[in-house]
Length: 299
Image 1 (tube, rainbow, N blue to C red):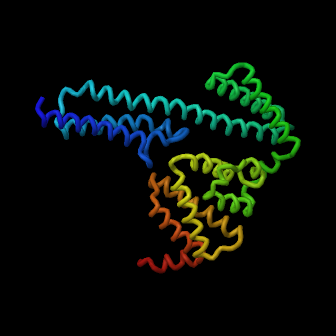
Image 2 (image 1 turned 30 degrees about the vertical axis):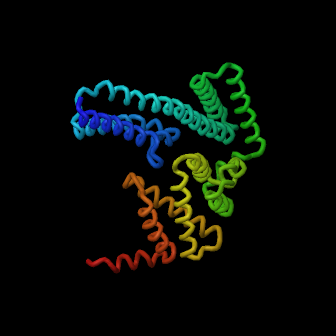
Image 3 (image 1 turned 30 degrees about the horizontal axis):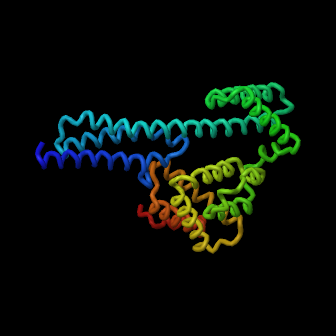
């Protein structure tokens, strides 16, 4: 092998390493930073990305007889993906379990005078406990602890009449929501026990803050804090002082984001800023915004 050929081969090998490092450890889109269900849905995409770009590298460097090297590098990638995939699969299952169990407790409490519905949800809770126990390979003693915890928490909900609040609250207490939202940028937010705020939040908002806590421990931390700062900048432009106005503005902006993600799949920082600018105008001018918009349209 000539000097040029050997240099070309080693550069090709290093490019494969660069590709693996990008796929696994890139600060913005590295697989190792994905969490829960996201890790499950992205695993195959990352493997496909490696295969596609390896083919491009082979063509670029005009490499032949590199099958063993590529196989070795691919296996290195797969071993890390498998490990992270398995860890995050358990986390995802645990999240599903907790969310389903919460619904079971609430439905049993709400329907405690309807034995058929209450028993149906109790049996569902038992099935969930069996399911998560098998997933996590829990022994009988550990499984019994889950059942005891479920019964104790259900009893607490019924005794405190908490289920009435859960059943009727379709909108969060504005003051509580805004206080929590303004803490998102701080380290204090990660330490909060959100269960202490559950009674004053709608189920949707409670789940929203739970997801924020999870995401703030991942590579999404900067994006989330930037989003909060963008929305709070809207407060300043609109000179919003009371919690109700802040709550309404936040919820409207978050709905704008959700709809835009549904339409476009991906939402950049520039997209968010544009949506907030438009929402500021709507929030400030109300119906006049749409009247002026129609006036500007030429027939």
